[in-house]
Length: 149
Image (cartoon, rainbow, N blue to C red; front, side, top):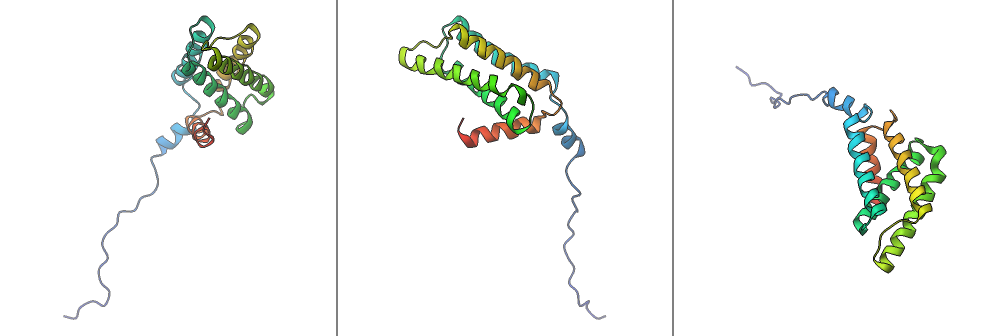
């Protein structure tokens, strides 16, 4: 019997894509549990700055929350109407951080507290928007890490 001219190829299983349930999970809006987790963490650290004694870490976490809020507004247009208020809160927090580095006390003045209060309310509303998905939160965090914020 003559040997075949074509050598046998090794069997390779075909992969038709990823699990559609995982893809759908990333496209779904944030769950209420995730919204509450983000919101509670931001508000707890904010209250430490209000009641005192706040720390640099508290100010940095609130700053990170405000940065996420700004990117949601500029990149995904969620809360874009409130961008000036978010930027004002970032400036207010910058003043808190500068004062904290100088004097060692991380606390708000009245107008700074009001600005950050409003920005955190905006942040909470942004998290409730259906356009904000876990995949988009991951993309925002990756953008912030790239920018070293």
